[in-house]
Image (tube, rainbow, N blue to C red):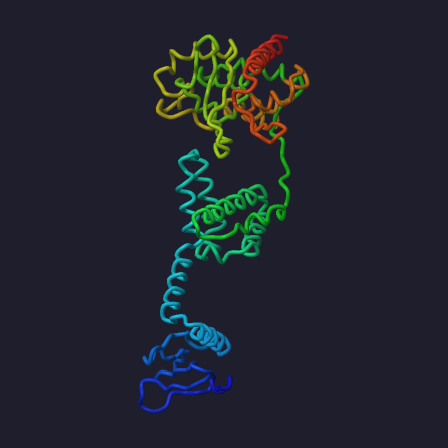
Length: 399
């Protein structure tokens, strides 16, 4: 057996290509003419001498080499073909190294992106490319543990992006689950980190929730003298309290002007839950606005087309810019503000049940058995509520 000091100090001697030194059973240290050292396992199989590489020294220490040689000796005694075993191990290692976190992550994105909006896809990809792939992207997905992920999330928290940290954790968890589903991982280490991040502190969006303030706000908004398209969007936003992105991408094809006017569209915030559609009953006030607007924008796919091209919807900032033009600052009202207004006033002033309101807000409302309600639930009651809401707004602004 070789001592540790011998392994370290031995040099190549003579003219042979390699010097060979025996260590434990079947384990040898080879030294080439350049004094590069490597470990090899030599054995006989049916009278034929064979050799397996264990690795170079000092990358593979003497103890590691001995452990591997003992493993091979035990396998050989068990009748296992070592050459076949090593080949399978090598192939498994290649597969593991090929299935890195980034490779699996991009496959997950490709599988899911057809169900996402373009903006959501861009956010997902950007967050992974910025915060995760540079640190975990090249690691085999099976080698990643929760302790590898948590420090990365802490860095995101430290820059004040707590909500982003939670979203990134969720995306990592989805990638691990996809790896499990496709046979490339056995568990989801990210799921074990739930509860380890700082809690998200919700910030209420700017909105007025006092009747007198709302009355003044409505008078200002309904007095807007700018673009008739933007003016219509301002009014319909108040009457329907949908999300700004849903309002600006409203399509004529999604509107039913029949006996029971309604607007049906895919709910942007709930695509991942599998919910296909949301229904907004249209009050007579909204129908009138749309009918007046149709001669102006009816030749576009969008109810509110972009000022530069009818092939695109209104920009993100069109409504906000109108608010600012009217002197309505960001602390008074924002695009999402109507949702908070409706949520509060419908319950406190008009007496509607919060569950019915949440249905109309397209929140994921669940029954006592934790099943998500269908989007058509309480449609009759919601239709009555939306008509009453429109009338209430008109009553306020006419005071």
